[in-house]
Length: 443
Image (cartoon, rainbow, N blue to C red):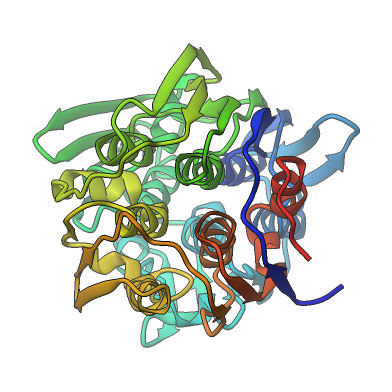
């Protein structure tokens, strides 16, 4: 199979109903929480991707039993203090920042060491786990806050008071999960800049004692230690990050409609919908909203946009849209006027430096931009239509950049060669298969 995608034709008008694979963030949290549970847990719709498979292999190395069945995944957890593993066990997180940052919560009570490693992309990202784990009493060794790291647990785990000020749901979740392992009835207090709240929702769904007060841009969270949850069943909804590529594809295509069924529409994740509706008013609707396993789920209806408007969004959208900004940039490229997206420096610390990569991409498609350390100004062109050869490469095998490039190629015209096709295995292995079902011609 070639390692690149060739796209030479725009996609023809379509009117389809589709499903996208399970939410990656929720899938990985299910895997880790089920390993910490007593008894059998079962997930329906768990994402089958490299990141999730890395998490399944990781908990297997700790003694949790994993059974892949026809329509679900079963995990037989060993409880907060029942895992079994060898000293210096090596865990390969591959490309998963979520696994890298949450894994310490599983082994924090064991006086053994685990060494976390990752692929070349993950190994360049800051681990950010050292300070909070040290506060709990866990020892973390690392060179320059990068992988590999060695984590050694303690039998004197203590509750913490911690302020998470970057809006990292991963570090917040690390603190919440580790706090479960502290002594019975001890209380850890975490103040967190607002970010996705899947872990808090899962705690509530499992009736784990947690208190949350919201004030301004921060959440004030208290977790009691020593609570042992039992095995559970979770239905995992479609991933809105995966759905976002089809939202953008439809908006940029002519005379097209799509309904994406059973997608997670948790408000901490729907920045893509809110911003897209500002760029293309009235083009997206949420239908059939319901709650399942503590998460909000709905069908997303999208139709082709007639006009694209420039935006200057509030920074309050940033944590809700951080993974979908490349698609927002693409829509802004078609907008009338100048769009300015501010305080997005966190994008430089993703699988690639997404500000730099996206800036280079926009220049390739003849869009004027001004790139700064933590912002991007985009001079839109409503008449943007390409008729040239474009090669997309050198983006650190970033899955979201590959898929965004495919959307651009199918809607803007031109003769495209997009490298690192296998990058989609990280989060959305069926992306090309699904987009071909809409009529896309990709070789």
